[in-house]
Amino acid sequence: MATSSLKSRLLAGKACFGLFCSIPSAVALEQLAVAGYDFVIIDLEHTLISPEQLETMLLAARAQRLDVLVRVPPRAPHLVLPLLDAGAAGIVFARVEDADQARQAVELCHYAPRGQRGLNSTRASRYGADDLAEHTRGAAADTLVVVMIESRQGLDHLAAIAGVDGVDVVLEGAADLSQSLGLHWQTQHPEVRAAIERMYAITRSAGKAFCALPRDPQAIRHWRRQGVSMFVLGDDRGIMRRAHQAHLQTHKEIS
Image (cartoon, rainbow, N blue to C red):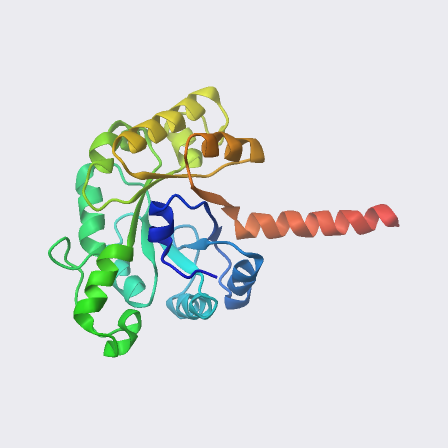
C-alpha cells in the first residue's frame, strides 16, 4: 500500500510497477492492490467503463491506498476535472502529438497559476474538510501528467512535448506506434524498437520520467539498466485470460 504519492516515489527513483485496468470491477481492482502493484491505469480509451463503475473503482482503490491513473481518449478534456476531483493521482493522455496538446494536458490537470483546473470541495479535498489552499499546494506537488506517444508525428515532436513544463512522464505506446510506422503489431520489429529507444533518449534529455511497457523480463532488465523506474506490465484482461488458460491446461494434463 502506498504511503507517499506515486509522483514522489518516481522522483525518488523507486521502481513502480503497474497495469492497465480494463475490467470494470471494484473486486478485480482490489485484487490488483492486494497482489502488490504500485499503481493501475484505468483505461477509458478502449473500454466502455461507465461513470458509475469508475466511481466504484476509484473508491475501491482509495480504500486499498492504491494509486490510480486514468487514461483518457484524445479530445476528451471534459473528463479530466471530475477524475482528479474523484481522487485519481493523475491522467494519462492518449495520442499526444504536439506541444500544444501537452500544454493543454498540463492546464487541465493543475490549478492556477500553472493551469486552469476549477476549484471546488470534492473527494480530493475531503469535501472541504481539508484546508483548500493546502490542498491546491499538495495537488501541484503530487498530480501526475502523463503523455502517451503513439505515432510517428508524436515521436517527431517529442522534444517539444517533453519540454513542456508540467509534463511529468512520457509513456511509450509501441502497439499504435508500430501501426503508424506501417508495421502493424510488430512491436519487436527493429524499427519500432529503435523508435522506442529514441523516445527514451529524448525523454531523458528533457529531464522527464520514461514509462516502459516491457513485453518480457529481459526488456525490464534492459530498461532498469537505463535507469527507468516506471513500468506498465500489460492489461488485466490479457493476464486473466492467460492465467485461466494455464489453470485449465494444468488440469487437462492431469486427466
